[in-house]
Amino acid sequence: GQMGSGQRLDVADLERLAGKPAARRLWDMAEEAKALTRAHAAEAGVAVHDGIAHAARSAAEVAHAHENAARLARDYGYDRITPLDGPALSALIGTGVYAGGDLDRGAGHLDPLALALGVARLARDAGAVIHEGAHVHAIRHARRATETTIVQTGTGRVLCDHVILAANGYLGHLDLGVAARVMPINNYVVATEPLGPRADALMAENVAVHDTRFVVNYWRLSDDRRLVFGGGETLGYRFPRDIAAKVRGPLEQVYPQLRGVRITHAWGGTLAITMSRLPLFARPAPNCLSASGFSGHGVALSHLAGRLMAEAVMGQSEGFDTMAALPARQFPGGAGLRWPLLVAGMGWYSLRDRLGV
Image (cartoon, rainbow, N blue to C red; front, side, top):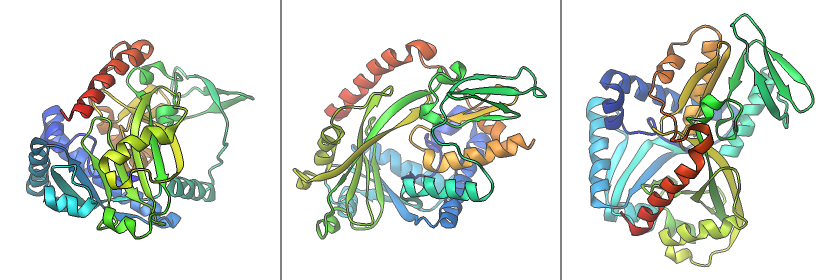
C-alpha cells in the first residue's frame, strides 16, 4: 500500500541509464502517477495518508539518500523530502536498528485492497464488464492490426480488437517474450493484533516505512492500530506453509519490543520484477499492449500504466512509447532458466542482508 515517488531507480541512476532529459520525463510521469492514484482513491472513497520514510542501514546508504534528496530539490524542483539522521529516524519509527534515512511527505500510503475494489467499482459504473475467475489459457495474436485476436479461456474464446496484458506477476507463460524479462516473486505480509497505546511508541506519525535491504522490509499502521508488516520473498508461485513464521523474524528484528506479539492475519501475493527494476512496457503483437514488472513500485505506476495503454489504444502513444523505450534485458536463461539462476542470485543477496553488507 505504499505510493512512492519517482521510478524504482533513483534519478542519478536514471540519468546514467537514459540521460537527463529522459530521466526528467520519467520523474514527471511518476509524479503524474501519484496524482492519478490520489484522484482514483478520492473518487473511490479511499483515504491516502501522506509520508513514507526510507530507512537506511549504513552511513553510506544514509549519505546516498541525503544526496538524492538534494539532487531532487536542486534539479527537479521536488522539495518534499526531509533528510533524517539516526536519532531523528529512530524517534519517528520507534526503532534504533537503522543509521538514518529520509521522510518523503509527497509520497503516501493507503489500503490497497480497498483501492482495488474501489477502482473496480468505478470501472463497472463506467460500463466495463468484469469477469472474475475467467482463466486465460492461450492467446492467438493477430498478425496485422486489422485482424482479430483470439483469447482462449477455460469455457470459450473471446474475439478481441485489442488485448492488454495487465497481469503483472500472474501472467505466467502467456507471452514468452514478456516472461523472459519479467520475474514473478512472492512477497508476504502479516498484521498484528491491535496494539492500542503500544502503537504510539512504534510510529510518531502516521507514515509508512521501507528499508534498504535487498529483500525489503516495509510497514505501516492500519486504521485500527495494527502493525501491517511485509518481509520475506520466494520465487515462483508456491507459498510457504507458515507465512506468519516467515515474516515474524524480520518483524522482530526491526521491533524487538514486539517479540511474541500475536499475529492475527498473514497472506502473500505475487508481484513482478525486471532486471533493471524499471517496468516493462511492450507491444507483443500489433494490437496487443503489455505493462508489468513494477518491481514493488506499482501502487502508483500501475495506475499510470492503465492510462498510458488506454491512450495508446486510442492512437495517442507518446507516453507509452516513452516507457517502452527503456532498456529491457532478459533474465539469464530467458523464460525457461530464469528461476534457478535468480534463486542463486537472491540467495547471495539475502545472505548479504543477514550479514549487514
